[in-house]
Length: 381
Image 1 (cartoon, rainbow, N blue to C red):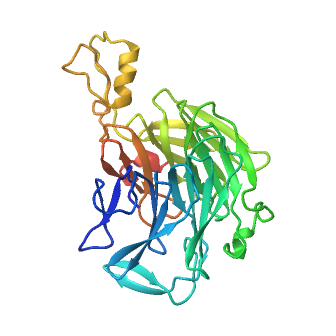
Image 2 (cartoon, rainbow, N blue to C red):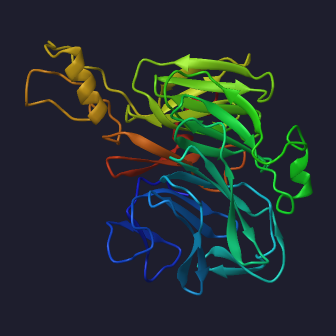
Image 3 (tube, rainbow, N blue to C red):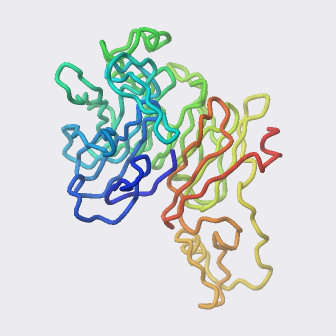
């Protein structure tokens, strides 16, 4: 799935229902406020959206049109993020139909390992875990009400389809159990979460003194990573009663999102407008490797600007050249394609445990596709 910036409306291309357009808010009265989260279910070919209007919709392809189904989240604050679970059982899916090279699934028999739940983080200090109730033909939401002391900024599913990690503006990262009887397959219950109840707090990580963002699991589910607004990234192994945690401090602006491209390699994106590469050595010690985009050498000329003006210019990605004598180092001067904060990173293709291609999107309105095949030194890590 291509990464996306915040949207005001979703419209689907009239001649190709497999493509959707991001346009300004107009005459389609589905969401009436900013769409803050979107995720595409690769196996079941469904889309879920979440919005500041406190609602969520699941979009199903019927013929040549996408039809939205309202999901009642029972929130009194904005929905901020959403993500499909990685697997499960979905009895409403069945026959495979190939249309335009894409495999579509239609209802007649059970299809295993399709996304059967999705999680919505909100500004109401709660997380909604939603699942399809076939008997009543609607999507039901169960709320994790406790533990969060502020807005939930990101959610991430463990590969076992049970554990859910969250980050929040209260500075903490948490892992919850989302086991729902009758929804989760029996093989999903294997492991430390098998005896836990829905909403039970597995672990709370109080490693950051600032807002936290962009939590992600490694492909195996053995490592958890998330970013802090204090220009630090955190890595946690053996998530449970006695987790092993470490952090990496970097000198540049904070990250907003991270992505495991392998078990020992992470790409981080954020306010510095340039993807950052982190890797673990043979001892499991994480460190910053380099920027993914080329960084040109800073100008050796005189710099009369204050540190405040330089930081202000870097934060907004604005060039001061031609305005004053300040030689502010901008994203364009560093040779990267993004000119403002990168707030989303998503894998591309059938990646499995190794990701070679991914996309980033930012507040500059750009979507960029990156190919690690061109970065030979990173492939050798």
